[in-house]
Amino acid sequence: MKKILFFLKSNLEEIDPRSNIRSLGTNIKGDVLAGITVGIIALPLALAFGEISQLGPIAGIWGAIAGGLIGGLFGGCMVGVSGPTAPKAAQIAGFMSFFVIGELNNPDLVAAFSIIFLSGLILVCISLLKISRFIHYTPYPVIAGFMCGIGVIVILTQLNAFVGLEVQSSIHEIILNLNHTFKNYNSEALIVSLPCLLILFMWPVIEKKIGRLQAIPSPLAALIMGTSIAYFMNLDIPYIGDKMGSASEGNVFSFYIPDLSRIRQFIIPALALSGLAILDSLLSCKVADNLTNTRHSSDRETFGQGMANMAAGLFGGVTTATATMRTVANIKFGAKTPLASIIHGATLLAILLGLGSLVAIIPTACLAAILFKVGIEIMDYRILPVLRKLPKTDLSIFTIVLIITVFEDLMIAIAIGVVFAVIGSRNEIKLVFQSNSKKIISNLTETKFALENHDKKKLDELPVKILKPDGPLFFGSIEPMIESYVRTDEHEVLIVDLSNVSMIDITGIYALEDLIKNSLKKNTEVFISGVDSKIEKILKDLNFLKDTSLSNFETSIQSMRPVLKERYDLSYETKN
Image 1: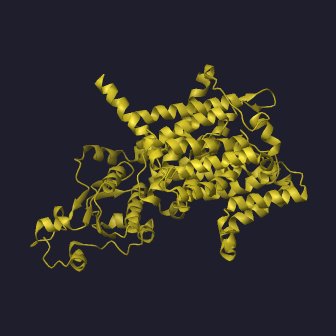
Image 2 (image 1 turned 180 degrees about the horizontal axis):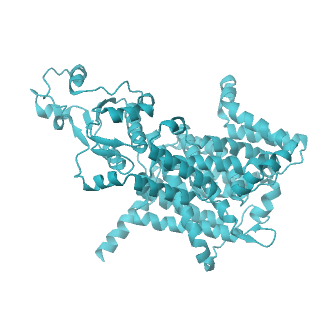
Image 3 (image 1 turned 30 degrees about the vertical axis):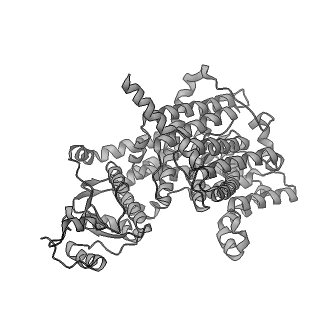
């Protein structure tokens, strides 16, 4: 009984929103401005992701509202912004082909929103089990293949809308009918989509030349341009208003009671949605951690996404997750607390309730152009430039995940990718389990860099840390290294000693790269030591020195002596 009570108490403390609530008043001006700006940015994206999901553009806005208000209040990332995302919208669209009503293949909205609600309930249960943190062990080639696959899906699924034809949800149908698409395009739709796409790509240049436009995000500029062209030229093309009726049953506000009598039909899609929500959300949170030098709570974020998806399912919204682009924008605009996310949701609610008639006249070709840009941006440009130099195992996993994501299923792709990665790294995994946990972070006196003829206590007080990973540095061992470093005291010098690293994969390289970049942002001087020739070649092939702005791998015990002497006025001999 005591164990049960302790379990309940610890979990309730983890998901308690009071810490989020207490922070709301600490950055009001910055959070309000950031929230309103991100809400405006999110409008075209929410409409577009609603279109991808086949639940309708208004459902996309309701998903963003639920993600902003509920996800912000209960989430574990202080600056995260939730709403519909490309992966989740694509996944729910895949499920919708199995849940239709009648010969006209109208979407079964009750089934869709029941699945979304159930996925939220599953996420709440997962958060209580405290297993969300295992997302950090996902191999990087799996993540990169998944993101590139999503980019391809988004681009392909918007081809028809871009040229003014009826949208097809099946990738196989789209590819088979490409010839028909290019032969039967609607020229009036291109009058909208092409200028919108041009604006999206040219906006950074336009902003530099016209400073006043810097306050307007590029998706909003494209939305205004595309809608204006279609309205003033009275173009005969598809508009959002054409689908608003089916999306909301004639009303902006609808309420859906989950049909739990069909839970056997819904449980597998709901599990897949919840799994993708964890992957999508926590990867976005890791991006936010790198930008803010903080550490999110994975279990609390999972709980927040569970609550947001339950709300989305009840109010007819597209399934939600923490969105990388909106989270990054939120940080750049000055957000520091969940108030920004809540304001973002409130802004969208105000737009929906007050400007519904304006939303209806937005052409779908305009949204397709915005999604084209999203599809291009969502691809992983960290891995694409070095594909030819990737180790064979990493390249194989990336390719497999990419192909299965596009042509089969997102979650199947991730599962197969992880299985292949585990099989390929089975020897390294054995070493991790067999090894005695050595200290990863040490003070100067505890390592070979220790200096003789000096008071040990004073040396220990020097702001110098040694990071010395041991054994293979791969997806199965990087998290302990990162956690150890996050917990260490502040320091001015970091020596990364790789002399005991037996192998390194791209996940380990990028984890080490991120750790070094974050240290450099804090004005910490970083040195690399003990790199053998084999690992040095891999690091150089994958642009490690270039991406971290470090000059070389040649740091030795002897070369550190003048550096420490100059910094801390030390003048004594090193150990042999």
